[in-house]
Image 1 (cartoon, rainbow, N blue to C red):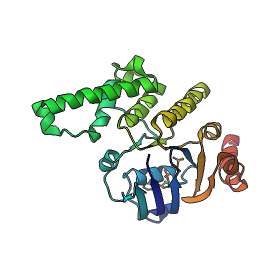
Image 2 (spheres, rainbow, N blue to C red):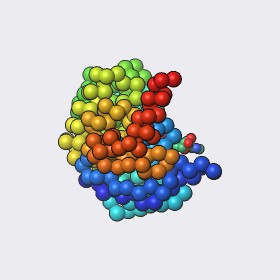
Image 3 (cartoon, rainbow, N blue to C red):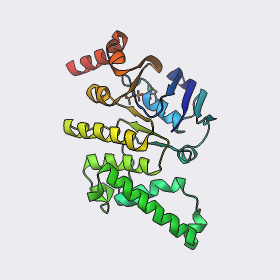
Image 4 (cartoon, rainbow, N blue to C red):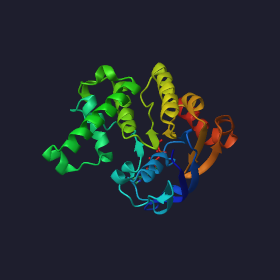
Length: 259
Ligand SMILES: Nc1ncnc2c1ncn2[C@@H]1O[C@H](COP(=O)(O)OP(=O)(O)OP(=O)(O)O)[C@@H](O)[C@H]1O
Protein backbone atom coordinates (compact mmCIF):
# COMPACT_ATOMS: atom_id res chain seq x y z
CA UNK A 1 0.00 0.00 0.00
CA UNK A 2 1.27 3.44 -0.84
CA UNK A 3 0.68 6.72 0.76
CA UNK A 4 0.78 9.58 -1.69
CA UNK A 5 0.25 13.27 -1.02
CA UNK A 6 0.68 16.04 -3.59
CA UNK A 7 0.98 19.59 -2.22
CA UNK A 8 0.95 22.90 -4.09
CA UNK A 9 2.37 21.31 -7.22
CA UNK A 10 3.11 23.80 -9.95
CA UNK A 11 4.58 23.47 -13.42
CA UNK A 12 5.46 26.37 -15.65
CA UNK A 13 6.65 26.15 -19.25
CA UNK A 14 7.82 29.71 -19.94
CA UNK A 15 4.64 31.76 -19.89
CA UNK A 16 2.37 28.70 -19.85
CA UNK A 17 1.09 27.29 -16.57
CA UNK A 18 0.55 23.57 -17.19
CA UNK A 19 -0.27 22.63 -13.58
CA UNK A 20 -1.38 25.33 -11.16
CA UNK A 21 -0.87 24.94 -7.43
CA UNK A 22 -2.46 21.50 -7.26
CA UNK A 23 -2.95 19.57 -4.00
CA UNK A 24 -4.57 16.18 -3.50
CA UNK A 25 -4.13 12.77 -1.86
CA UNK A 26 -4.27 9.48 -3.73
CA UNK A 27 -6.65 7.22 -1.79
CA UNK A 28 -5.33 3.80 -0.70
CA UNK A 29 -6.31 0.75 -2.73
CA UNK A 30 -8.70 2.73 -4.93
CA UNK A 31 -9.05 3.37 -8.64
CA UNK A 32 -8.68 7.10 -9.19
CA UNK A 33 -9.30 8.72 -12.56
CA UNK A 34 -7.78 12.04 -13.57
CA UNK A 35 -9.93 13.62 -16.23
CA UNK A 36 -10.21 16.96 -18.01
CA UNK A 37 -10.15 18.54 -21.45
CA UNK A 38 -7.16 18.28 -23.76
CA UNK A 39 -4.25 20.31 -22.42
CA UNK A 40 -5.66 20.39 -18.87
CA UNK A 41 -2.35 19.17 -17.43
CA UNK A 42 -3.10 15.47 -16.83
CA UNK A 43 -0.01 14.00 -18.48
CA UNK A 44 2.17 16.79 -17.08
CA UNK A 45 0.95 15.77 -13.63
CA UNK A 46 1.87 12.10 -14.26
CA UNK A 47 5.23 13.22 -15.63
CA UNK A 48 5.98 15.16 -12.47
CA UNK A 49 4.89 12.36 -10.15
CA UNK A 50 7.01 9.80 -11.99
CA UNK A 51 10.06 12.07 -12.27
CA UNK A 52 9.97 12.87 -16.01
CA UNK A 53 9.24 16.57 -15.40
CA UNK A 54 10.60 18.56 -12.50
CA UNK A 55 7.89 20.71 -10.90
CA UNK A 56 8.54 24.44 -10.72
CA UNK A 57 7.51 24.15 -7.09
CA UNK A 58 5.53 21.94 -4.74
CA UNK A 59 5.93 18.64 -2.98
CA UNK A 60 5.20 15.02 -3.88
CA UNK A 61 5.29 12.81 -0.80
CA UNK A 62 5.50 9.09 -1.51
CA UNK A 63 5.39 7.04 1.68
CA UNK A 64 6.46 10.18 3.50
CA UNK A 65 9.49 10.92 1.26
CA UNK A 66 9.55 14.00 -0.96
CA UNK A 67 10.43 12.56 -4.37
CA UNK A 68 10.74 15.88 -6.23
CA UNK A 69 14.10 15.94 -8.03
CA UNK A 70 14.56 12.17 -8.02
CA UNK A 71 15.20 10.43 -11.33
CA UNK A 72 12.46 8.29 -12.93
CA UNK A 73 14.55 5.12 -12.40
CA UNK A 74 14.91 5.90 -8.69
CA UNK A 75 11.18 6.56 -8.39
CA UNK A 76 10.43 3.28 -10.18
CA UNK A 77 12.71 1.44 -7.80
CA UNK A 78 10.78 2.96 -4.89
CA UNK A 79 7.68 1.17 -6.18
CA UNK A 80 5.96 3.48 -8.62
CA UNK A 81 5.06 2.08 -12.05
CA UNK A 82 3.48 3.74 -15.05
CA UNK A 83 2.43 3.19 -18.63
CA UNK A 84 2.56 5.82 -21.36
CA UNK A 85 -0.01 7.36 -23.68
CA UNK A 86 2.17 6.31 -26.62
CA UNK A 87 3.35 2.73 -26.41
CA UNK A 88 6.92 2.24 -25.22
CA UNK A 89 7.44 -1.50 -25.63
CA UNK A 90 10.71 -2.76 -27.10
CA UNK A 91 9.54 -3.92 -30.55
CA UNK A 92 12.36 -6.39 -31.17
CA UNK A 93 12.19 -8.13 -27.80
CA UNK A 94 9.73 -10.89 -26.99
CA UNK A 95 6.89 -10.33 -24.57
CA UNK A 96 8.79 -12.20 -21.85
CA UNK A 97 11.99 -10.22 -22.51
CA UNK A 98 10.06 -6.94 -22.41
CA UNK A 99 8.60 -7.76 -19.02
CA UNK A 100 11.90 -9.06 -17.65
CA UNK A 101 13.72 -5.94 -18.90
CA UNK A 102 11.33 -3.74 -16.96
CA UNK A 103 12.11 -5.62 -13.76
CA UNK A 104 15.83 -4.98 -13.68
CA UNK A 105 15.22 -1.62 -12.02
CA UNK A 106 14.23 -3.48 -8.87
CA UNK A 107 16.93 -6.17 -8.79
CA UNK A 108 19.82 -6.30 -6.34
CA UNK A 109 22.53 -7.96 -8.42
CA UNK A 110 24.42 -5.36 -10.43
CA UNK A 111 26.08 -5.42 -13.82
CA UNK A 112 29.12 -7.22 -12.39
CA UNK A 113 26.94 -10.08 -11.15
CA UNK A 114 25.37 -10.34 -14.60
CA UNK A 115 28.76 -10.37 -16.36
CA UNK A 116 30.26 -12.95 -14.01
CA UNK A 117 27.05 -15.01 -13.98
CA UNK A 118 27.38 -15.38 -10.21
CA UNK A 119 25.05 -17.84 -8.38
CA UNK A 120 23.27 -14.81 -6.89
CA UNK A 121 22.67 -13.45 -10.37
CA UNK A 122 21.40 -16.79 -11.72
CA UNK A 123 19.00 -17.15 -8.81
CA UNK A 124 17.74 -13.63 -9.36
CA UNK A 125 17.26 -14.21 -13.11
CA UNK A 126 15.18 -17.32 -12.35
CA UNK A 127 13.06 -15.30 -9.93
CA UNK A 128 12.64 -12.47 -12.47
CA UNK A 129 11.52 -14.95 -15.12
CA UNK A 130 9.00 -16.53 -12.75
CA UNK A 131 7.47 -13.19 -11.73
CA UNK A 132 7.40 -12.03 -15.36
CA UNK A 133 5.59 -15.18 -16.46
CA UNK A 134 3.08 -14.82 -13.64
CA UNK A 135 2.35 -11.21 -14.68
CA UNK A 136 1.96 -12.20 -18.33
CA UNK A 137 -0.55 -14.90 -17.30
CA UNK A 138 -2.37 -12.52 -14.97
CA UNK A 139 -2.78 -9.98 -17.76
CA UNK A 140 -3.93 -12.76 -20.10
CA UNK A 141 -1.35 -12.44 -22.89
CA UNK A 142 0.45 -15.73 -22.21
CA UNK A 143 -0.31 -16.95 -25.75
CA UNK A 144 2.18 -14.31 -26.93
CA UNK A 145 4.97 -14.94 -24.38
CA UNK A 146 7.65 -15.78 -26.95
CA UNK A 147 6.46 -13.47 -29.75
CA UNK A 148 8.27 -10.28 -30.63
CA UNK A 149 6.36 -7.31 -29.28
CA UNK A 150 6.15 -5.71 -32.72
CA UNK A 151 4.17 -8.71 -34.01
CA UNK A 152 1.46 -8.46 -31.36
CA UNK A 153 -2.02 -7.09 -32.04
CA UNK A 154 -2.35 -3.50 -30.81
CA UNK A 155 -4.46 -4.38 -27.75
CA UNK A 156 -1.96 -7.02 -26.63
CA UNK A 157 0.85 -4.44 -26.93
CA UNK A 158 -1.04 -2.14 -24.60
CA UNK A 159 -1.54 -5.04 -22.18
CA UNK A 160 2.16 -5.84 -22.40
CA UNK A 161 2.90 -2.36 -21.08
CA UNK A 162 0.63 -3.02 -18.11
CA UNK A 163 2.28 -6.42 -17.51
CA UNK A 164 5.68 -4.75 -17.56
CA UNK A 165 4.53 -2.13 -15.06
CA UNK A 166 3.02 -4.75 -12.73
CA UNK A 167 6.09 -6.94 -12.85
CA UNK A 168 8.06 -4.45 -10.79
CA UNK A 169 5.54 -5.26 -8.04
CA UNK A 170 4.66 -1.62 -7.60
CA UNK A 171 3.08 0.03 -4.60
CA UNK A 172 1.13 2.27 -6.96
CA UNK A 173 0.31 2.10 -10.67
CA UNK A 174 -0.27 4.98 -13.11
CA UNK A 175 -1.95 4.29 -16.46
CA UNK A 176 -1.91 7.06 -19.07
CA UNK A 177 -4.91 6.57 -21.37
CA UNK A 178 -4.86 2.76 -21.19
CA UNK A 179 -7.98 2.50 -23.40
CA UNK A 180 -6.65 4.69 -26.23
CA UNK A 181 -7.57 3.07 -29.54
CA UNK A 182 -9.72 0.37 -27.90
CA UNK A 183 -13.14 -0.65 -29.19
CA UNK A 184 -16.15 -1.20 -26.91
CA UNK A 185 -15.45 -4.83 -26.06
CA UNK A 186 -11.73 -4.14 -25.45
CA UNK A 187 -12.76 -1.38 -23.06
CA UNK A 188 -15.04 -3.78 -21.14
CA UNK A 189 -12.13 -6.18 -20.88
CA UNK A 190 -9.89 -3.40 -19.57
CA UNK A 191 -12.46 -2.44 -16.93
CA UNK A 192 -12.36 -6.06 -15.71
CA UNK A 193 -8.56 -6.08 -15.72
CA UNK A 194 -8.26 -2.86 -13.71
CA UNK A 195 -10.69 -4.29 -11.13
CA UNK A 196 -8.62 -7.49 -10.92
CA UNK A 197 -5.41 -5.50 -10.46
CA UNK A 198 -6.91 -3.61 -7.56
CA UNK A 199 -8.27 -6.78 -5.92
CA UNK A 200 -5.19 -8.92 -6.47
CA UNK A 201 -2.38 -6.43 -5.95
CA UNK A 202 -4.25 -4.22 -3.48
CA UNK A 203 -2.59 -1.07 -4.78
CA UNK A 204 -4.00 2.27 -5.91
CA UNK A 205 -4.45 2.53 -9.67
CA UNK A 206 -4.47 6.07 -11.05
CA UNK A 207 -5.54 6.54 -14.64
CA UNK A 208 -5.94 9.28 -17.18
CA UNK A 209 -8.93 8.56 -19.40
CA UNK A 210 -11.30 10.31 -21.76
CA UNK A 211 -14.04 7.67 -22.08
CA UNK A 212 -16.78 8.70 -19.64
CA UNK A 213 -18.47 5.27 -19.64
CA UNK A 214 -15.22 3.57 -18.69
CA UNK A 215 -14.40 6.21 -16.07
CA UNK A 216 -17.83 5.86 -14.50
CA UNK A 217 -17.57 2.07 -14.28
CA UNK A 218 -13.99 1.75 -13.12
CA UNK A 219 -13.41 4.67 -10.73
CA UNK A 220 -13.85 4.93 -6.98
CA UNK A 221 -12.62 8.49 -7.07
CA UNK A 222 -12.34 11.15 -9.78
CA UNK A 223 -10.35 14.36 -10.00
CA UNK A 224 -11.09 16.84 -12.76
CA UNK A 225 -8.41 19.19 -14.02
CA UNK A 226 -9.07 22.29 -16.08
CA UNK A 227 -6.34 24.70 -17.12
CA UNK A 228 -3.98 22.96 -14.70
CA UNK A 229 -6.25 23.49 -11.71
CA UNK A 230 -8.49 21.15 -9.77
CA UNK A 231 -12.06 21.79 -10.86
CA UNK A 232 -13.75 19.02 -8.85
CA UNK A 233 -12.92 15.88 -6.91
CA UNK A 234 -14.97 13.10 -5.36
CA UNK A 235 -17.19 10.10 -6.09
CA UNK A 236 -18.04 9.44 -9.76
CA UNK A 237 -21.77 10.18 -9.47
CA UNK A 238 -21.10 13.53 -7.77
CA UNK A 239 -18.26 14.64 -10.03
CA UNK A 240 -19.81 13.56 -13.32
CA UNK A 241 -23.04 15.37 -12.46
CA UNK A 242 -21.31 18.56 -11.32
CA UNK A 243 -22.48 21.35 -13.69
CA UNK A 244 -18.97 22.89 -13.75
CA UNK A 245 -17.55 19.59 -14.94
CA UNK A 246 -20.26 19.14 -17.54
CA UNK A 247 -19.54 22.61 -18.87
CA UNK A 248 -15.74 22.27 -18.88
CA UNK A 249 -15.43 18.71 -20.03
CA UNK A 250 -18.57 17.08 -21.33
CA UNK A 251 -19.71 20.30 -22.97
CA UNK A 252 -16.42 20.50 -24.79
CA UNK A 253 -16.71 16.88 -25.86
CA UNK A 254 -20.16 17.53 -27.33
CA UNK A 255 -18.75 20.51 -29.22
CA UNK A 256 -15.91 18.32 -30.50
CA UNK A 257 -18.35 15.66 -31.66
CA UNK A 258 -20.50 18.23 -33.41
CA UNK A 259 -17.54 19.40 -35.51
N1 LIG B 1 7.35 19.63 -22.61
C1 LIG B 1 6.48 20.64 -22.74
N2 LIG B 1 6.87 21.85 -23.17
C2 LIG B 1 6.00 22.88 -23.29
N3 LIG B 1 4.68 22.78 -23.03
C3 LIG B 1 4.23 21.58 -22.61
C4 LIG B 1 5.08 20.45 -22.45
N4 LIG B 1 4.34 19.40 -22.01
C5 LIG B 1 3.07 19.86 -21.92
N5 LIG B 1 3.01 21.16 -22.28
C6 LIG B 1 1.81 22.01 -22.29
O1 LIG B 1 1.23 21.93 -20.99
C7 LIG B 1 -0.20 21.92 -21.10
C8 LIG B 1 -0.72 20.68 -20.44
O2 LIG B 1 -0.40 19.56 -21.29
P1 LIG B 1 -0.70 18.06 -20.88
O3 LIG B 1 -0.15 17.19 -21.97
O4 LIG B 1 -0.25 17.81 -19.50
O5 LIG B 1 -2.29 18.03 -20.93
P2 LIG B 1 -3.28 16.78 -20.92
O6 LIG B 1 -4.38 17.14 -19.99
O7 LIG B 1 -2.51 15.54 -20.63
O8 LIG B 1 -3.81 16.77 -22.41
P3 LIG B 1 -4.30 15.53 -23.36
O9 LIG B 1 -5.61 15.10 -22.83
O10 LIG B 1 -4.42 16.19 -24.70
O11 LIG B 1 -3.23 14.49 -23.30
C9 LIG B 1 -0.54 22.02 -22.58
O12 LIG B 1 -0.80 23.36 -22.89
C10 LIG B 1 0.73 21.52 -23.25
O13 LIG B 1 0.88 22.09 -24.53
